[in-house]
Length: 508
Image (cartoon, rainbow, N blue to C red):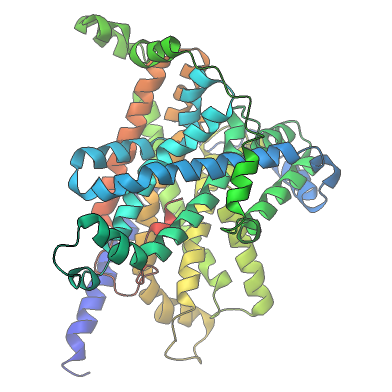
């Protein structure tokens, strides 16, 4: 071994050792805490239920979808207008994002609360209307766009800007020198976020808004699996054909046409809105300055510490499960393994799992296994693991192995995984914020996380308690994101994001 190569190899070995320690530490912590999780299977015959679901998926009732064009149009309209308004609000915020700590904190707060929780909050004022659906997408998306657009703008090369003559204004420098260089990246991420909005728009049906998800939940809950299978295939077809009907020349016409379907618009009572914001969301003892009564109010919130513990535990389990799933599944879609038919099948499986939102997957597993943490754990692990596996497999295809004679197991273990593992772990820690966000949400299915108590508080019109729990959820999400940033691998040269932002495609 030459003296010149030794330091590089030692540095690489040191990095791989640190990454292995982080992974083993994550898995070990999950295994230690696993006995505290409720993983009971309470249904009588889960395999028979799974068989009926698969039968419905393989033999869908296509006729059941003929009465749903309005729900499909609303799903697209909500997603499109939510994304568009998120861009309109998020882009100017991105220009100020690096300079304002208050703005960065505000954006972190609004994106830390899931779209469905925003919908539950807005439902109390705007009802089951398009305003609720669009605003529930716009508010968190504005914070997401502000952050990601700011990160993209930070990557702008300075040489073309510095080459402009003196006296050119800041606005002109931005429009004519900076914006053209990052326009393609901004457009690419906006299209990707629109795909995320489509999934979120479907999920809005779980709180009663008339999107495709409303009919999906009803069909699954009532055991009409052939109809549910047809609706799932419609959903997958909408996502798969997005590049066709979502062309930039068609979207303006779709947006204008959808305006005729989004009404009727609700009558907004300004006094009622102000009362909701200034009175209903806050504890009475706080408004009255009664500090001893406020302490008593805190004590009346049921099972707060167990709910926080379950949320963190399920988030940890989902992160560890995503790591295991990603390690197992990325070879299914890589050109270095199998043959063309197996790779196509593998990519299809990964696309289906990453396209199905965690809430929908957890709901299906809940019907099959009964209420416990197990359906949520499976949903989080499969969805996030498939997303990471898909991105890692795409990067693996760009790697030229040193030896083609190695068997598949050796090629995986010694040739490819050491070069991919840093990027895989970086993507996993980027997903940590999303995983804890979804973990809280899954409580809406009856799992004892914070989302369960948030949903119950809204159901019993205890808005002050619901808002407080939303603040706790946002704080947990921000804290987990900060912790993930600290442990995220930084000294990685060979990652899935080496030509851009490593986690941008893992933030949905």
